[in-house]
Image 1 (cartoon, rainbow, N blue to C red):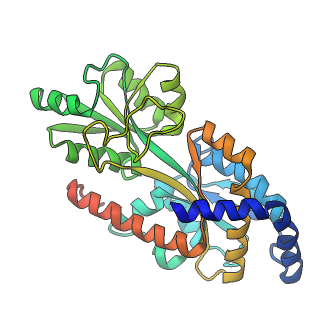
Image 2 (cartoon, rainbow, N blue to C red):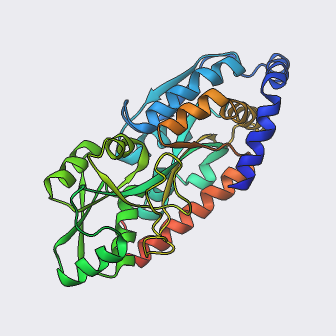
Length: 327
């Protein structure tokens, strides 16, 4: 992630000075010449939608045209991705690319597109740490005790997640495999159902991204058993990492980015990337995202492409190791 941080610092220094060059470049080549549609594969109200709607108006200011979030929910983002790859490659249709785009490549035997070939990757935008959340009264206090509990009570430990095939679900399956105990992964339609199931005792552990769970932890309605991160999250300094809790190597992270149809001119892709870098360097936006449990992180097109390829390989390995049947 060091390359993303350096890019943000550079973009931050150029934020004010860079607006004029971006607009001059637009005047020279005519892009964008009309409103830009940002296709998003999930319904309004989720964390991906919230972040997109915080970023879009700031992109509009830099690019000089409205950036309109167009929600296309369905099939874990496949509907939106297919619409994006079939759109005119002129930069006026962009895709809010997510970790589900990468897990889908790893999980599904057949997709109506080849993400690596059919997308031009502009920039990552933000990252979401994962958390293992439990009810406050859950007796094991850390993962070491959880493993002991699972061994003493085979088949009684349930791990909950949402939406088969996304990073939360695959993170739950990875946890089950790494714990090495008899446990069941149960998926729910959405985060509210999942968190209610934890409180009710239907599942003992929720594998979820941090943003929708953070308020529940801060209000002591749930407890962070462990963060699936390398370092502790600043807003939850008392929540240990999985490694600190006895499960080294358990790191799961979701993310968002922006891409375009593959044949989009490289200059247009670079323009979008530069605009994203400038937007994500904004101090007010960064602070607002961090309060939500979101970590800002822009990148170059080449960095995003390399990152996306690494993500698909990583999740393919997780699927193999957890013996998840490809769909």
